[in-house]
Length: 213
Image (tube, rainbow, N blue to C red):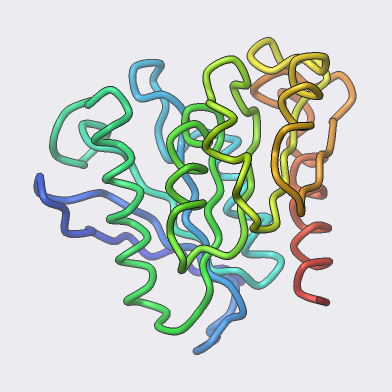
């Protein structure tokens, strides 16, 4: 049974409100994950259904998952900072998780705005060894952030995603550095409405494959 711990993560602007999901008490898991939520100005929070699904799927694969609210969301202090401050929040969350699980490789996952902010941070952080992007906004996520990122990456997208439709996604994905995997969920919208189980399966399958390597 999963345990979910409420945490307050010290940040330069005060605190970040977070939830750490652990499926089983494991002192040294093979990976630990930070999961980033969609746009704060679009009512995005760590309680978003896609973010919850990502954390649950990671937990089911044995990966403790920390989801947190960006600055100015929920009990997190501060105010929206155009992605720059939010990238700092991602680094803060990674620091906290690395302290919680010392010597454990980290995974960075993000949905929508969370992938736009989080994936470049994860690429730059040597502690992060794996990356997951769901509902990637291909029109705004600069490929330069990923075209030299040699870490294993999973991109999961709905075939009806209005912010990253298949033609644009395929052109964008072609420029992403290997190793990489893309999973298209047929009929799924940007928010994976009625297709959250398929999203979870894609994440769980990929994590299990990575852990066998």
